[in-house]
Image (cartoon, rainbow, N blue to C red; front, side, top):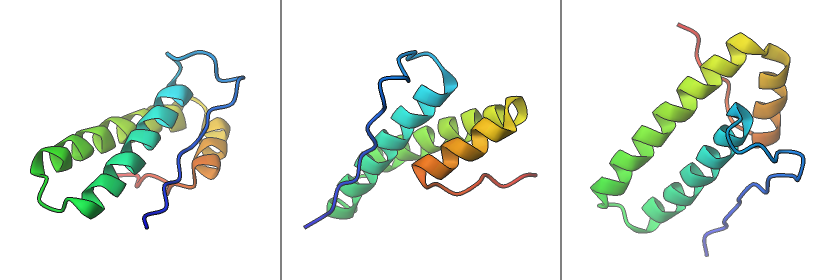
Length: 87
């Protein structure tokens, strides 16, 4: 049985256009697609979608780290994701 872990957004994150909310929703999509791809390994269209969403989340995380570094650290701690590599 695959354990599905999805993040529930608290009521204080009411602004759906905020960078934080978008990163939350992309992370939920990434986890959902990852669990789907564990079952359907040859679903190449979903793999492409996953790569696109990963790129979008990476760009948003880079933007957030430049704008507000403390908020960025707090968010990646809550989501339990790795820090982005700095080029």
